[in-house]
Image 1 (cartoon, one colour):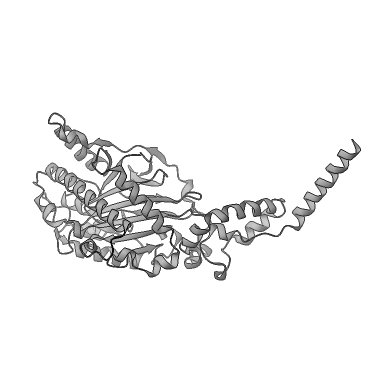
Image 2: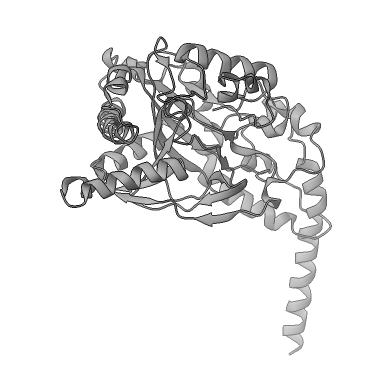
Length: 415
């Protein structure tokens, strides 16, 4: 009995001495992508000081080392958000936590495209597509014709591409595609509400006609973009038919080589309540085809309230863009949406944007027209100008046919 008491006494005191002598390790190696030479992030020291009196520093060190061993590659690949936007975090207001908003989860309308092959169900299926585009601006599709194997292969290549060191991603052209495809953060942000905790490869598919490499990733990108192009043509034809059009306008002006494919990655965000994964916006295109993983994050605005979209495996999400809203004279809705950041999980998605050539004229298909006539090039230029000068996208309200176009009370945000 005496021996047991002595052993317990030694164990307890040894543990206390160990805790007292523990020295905090550099936790930002886990949470922040900036290197140590860029200085500690804004809350590093405060966090360590809070942990030390509680006697949990040594436990934090062990957890830190364990996680660091498994995530060293991810840390090296993350963009340096805190280093680049440190001034925004230092000047941020005390309030403004996005997570404080009450958000309801929902399932989007779902349409089974296999019914289009059934003469008895085809018309009803088309009506459901038109209704969803009018009432929601968003809907899901199943039996869409894109093989799961293609989507799975692209996801694997997407993860591999984003795991590359940040410097390599920032300095090199992605697979030889034309243009500066790698993007991250928000260069024009002047506040945290304008910052997106996101990195992406925004790929102009005009590059697909000039292959610079035959890598596996390049091949699967071209295979998926071709499949999504066929799917988008089918859906836009149905939506055009809902307007009483034969769809030739869209077919003639929206070719695969004027469209874009974007590979998105949303890194874990240690200040998820203060920064969006992707800021609220509408899409600057005709139609978007989205494939997302099973991490919840997408939200859309309906009836003045934000609604969280539950991920649904095996489905693709379709949403109407600004150009279709203008061409349909407001019948189809380009709905504001956003992506919430996640403090623990990374999130991946792939988006196919149906765009015309910059010379294409967009004109309302009904009278009286809500929007004036404009070219796609003019619209994109105005969006870029507004984002640069104002920090957000004004969008279609700039192009109203009446004098109301100068009012920005319902301004929308950048794509």
